[in-house]
Amino acid sequence: MRLLIVEDEKRLALSLAKGLTAEGYAVDVVHDGLEGLHMAGEGSYDLVILDIMLPGMNGYRVCGALRSAGHDVPILMLTAKDGEYDEAEGLDTGADDYLTKPFSYVVLVARVKALLRRRGSSGGGSPVHVLGDLKVDTAARRVHLGADEIALTTKEFAVLEQLVVRAGEVVSKAEILKHVWDFAYDGDPNIVEVYISTLRRKLGAALIRTVRGAGYRLEAR
Ligand code: CA
Image 1 (cartoon, rainbow, N blue to C red):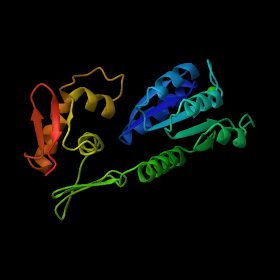
Image 2 (tube, rainbow, N blue to C red):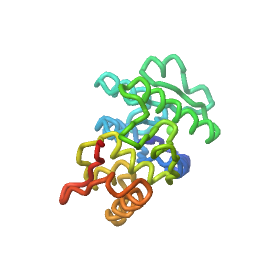
Image 3 (tube, helix red, strand yellow):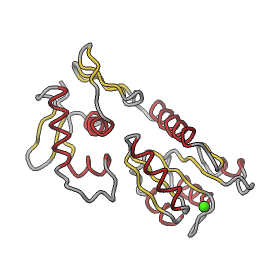
Image 4 (tube, rainbow, N blue to C red):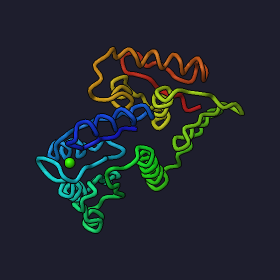
């Protein structure tokens, strides 16, 4: 799951990013409305957290522009408590939910999860993927192999999720990196191999095939 935070208060943006990364999301951060619109418009985010008062372009206009361009990514708006936010106006521009600052981090995470769940259940397809003995529930983040529940770390789960939602197709290492780590990740791309080998150890060696020069494919058994 890939999230975009558009927030010009840098300390707040970075602490949200840090917390959401620890929850297992890949998080990108921008501090300007126009840049936010550009990145959200590329369409590869599962959710956008959008401040209202922003340099470049305000959050209402970013949200309105995304909706009129046909983007249905869930948008959670953030606002200050001083009355800058007009709830009706925010919902008019197509925001899915809003939070008033200062908010508790726990509440933010709960809202993010609820929006992602709502999207999962309405956006075509169940969050539960069954492939032979393997059952992956992307909403509850639980994995079963036969009757046994398999414990995965958040990153292991995120890598598996990328393969499961595209079972039978080849998923490249770069795509996994982009969705599971974030765009600022500048470490070794071979980290993906490390996670794939852990998944093979936990779930069975035959489950994930290496397609030489192309990536990995989860066998749809
Ligand atoms: Ca602001």
